[in-house]
Structures are given as structure tokens and as C-alpha cells.
Image (cartoon, rainbow, N blue to C red; front, side):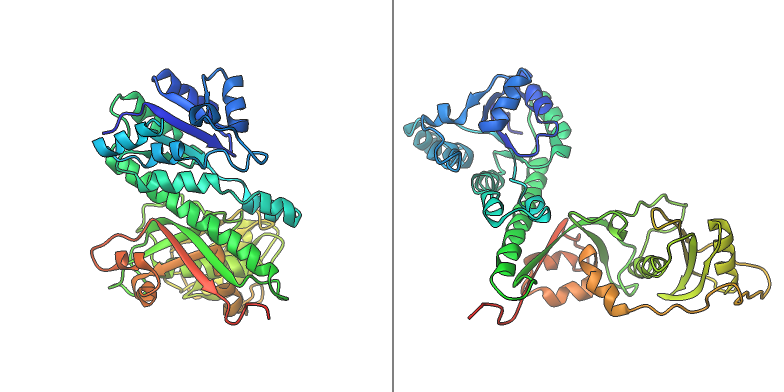
Length: 397
């Protein structure tokens, strides 16, 4: 356990930060902060020491340089040894035990079509530097990059013992995943500007593990389901499983669900699609979801294992896994579309919205992806996954 006595708080996303900092302050933690975060904390009644006061060096260049200072990074990177404490004390610094930082909204800036100059200004330098320093020194320092972690970290601080090693390591891994994705977004933006093509020369896809699946493409393989960090609404990545007392999903279950989603998106009104091994075997539209489901199901009533998805105006869906078998041999092809052609290529091009990765597929990336070994037998899948793709001969002449 490591007690938290001093924290540096500097965030772009200020969701919950005042409450978090107030909780730290009430627990006896000194708060260092910068710029707009310091103002927000003071307005919220939280005592704050400006980083410029701590470093005895002013912010310069309109805030471009404020935390890039030996007292800041020395305070974060200091190991719990007499030599490091003496070295830090020799430059007038003090240990920093917690770093709460999230980064300039670069991806959001690009998404709203900002000018190139504004986009460049939203490349964070000091933030990732502090995050990486704190994550590296996880043996002593707690790094917090996600507001959803404030409550757990604050509870650990208030316990008097501070965050334990397991929590610090998990937060550090999360922080490195964030900075990796952030750098990937910057590289994609800049390389897309450096050629005549609108496509980036380097594309880093960042995914977070949602859960382990029952097995991979084959029963003897392990697998995990990964989702895009900023997955759009309506994608399989954000699907919510309500549970029905059945088995956990497998790789093939998810492939079938994906095929069903893509098929039903061909329609605007209430529709139902029945899929068996990624092939639609019953498709119907009707005035109500109930009727569409009944018609689509009866198109292949003897199918013993299929998946049904109903979508009203493509705003919500209900997926039924392995519904009860129908009695008899009633086929109603006159009111149901028996076959729906859709492009497998298009579905896999959209794979950036979701990634299902299994041991046998990831193992082929082992030479380029250090974390791939974690999918070997008996080892858990990594929580975060970054895939880097580079265009061939993409550099302009």
C-alpha cells in the first residue's frame, strides 16, 4: 500500500474532477494543479497549489510549457529510495503520489472539422508525459486518466492505505492504452494530410476487451471480444446482453449476430432476420415486430439453432438466441424473403467498429504484437489491444 500525500490534477475533461479533488483534499492530500483545472477547483472550494508556484517557474508560451519541469517529473518518477529522495530534494522538489490527467480532446477536434492550426494546438505534450511517467512508476504512483475510476481510487485513499499494487498496475495499463491510442490518432491525422489520398498512411486501431468468449472459431481455441474505444451507437460493440440463462457467447455466435445486424440494416421499418451460420434463412418485414418475427421464423421452422434480430427503424434491437423450435413443416416464403445477399467484404471492412480476436488469428501477429502471447492456452487475453496498419509506399515524393 502507498499513502497519497500529494496529487497533481490537470484535466481537459472536468467531469467529476471537483468532487474527486475535494475528496482527496478532505483526506489530507495536497493538490497541485494548472490553468483551467486550478480555476475550476478553486471555484469548487478546493485548496490548490499552482504548479508554477511549486516549480517556481511560470507557465510560458500561452501555457504550452507548464508541467515540463524536473520538479514535476522528478516528483512523479522518484523511486522510494534514499538516493532518489536526496536527488529530488536537491532540486527543491517533493514526491507526487497521484497523477490525475486526461488529455486534450484531439480526436474530437478532428471530428468536428477544426482547422489544421487548431488541431495541432490540441496535440497534448505535457499530459502524456506525466501520464507515462506516473504509469511507469506504478510501484509508488497512482495514475488516473478516466473519470469512471475516481470513485474507486478515492475510496482507497480514504481507507488510509492508498491504492494497492493491483489497482495501481491496472490503472497504469489503462493509461498506457490511452496514450497509445492518442498517438495513433495523431499519426493517422498527420499521415492522411501528407498524401493525395484521404486515407491515413498509418492507422492504429485501439480496442478494449469487453469479455472472454466461450471458445474461439473452433472449440479447442480460446477467444475474447474486443470493442472500439469510441464505438458509434448502433454497433455490435455497444450491444447490451440482457441474458437468458444460456451459455456465454462464442466467436461464432458473435459472427452470426454481426451478420444479422448488417442484414437487418437493409430495412427502414420493423423487420426480422433469421440467420444460420451467417446465412439469412428467413427475412421479413411487417407492420409490427411481432408479425415480422413470426413470418421470418416460419420461413425455416425446422432450423434448430438460429438467431433472430428485430429492428424498428434501426434504433433498437432484440436478439433472440436459439428460440423454441416450431412444430410442423410450415414454410411461408410468399411473405418472407428466403435469401438476402450481402457483402462479406463490406462487413469485414467495417471491422474497425468491432474486433473479435482468437488465439489462432492473433498468434500470427505475435512477431509484431508483444501482448499476443497472452492468448496462449492458460493465459488471459490482454485488456487492451492496439493494431497498427501502415500503408505501403505512402510517403509523398
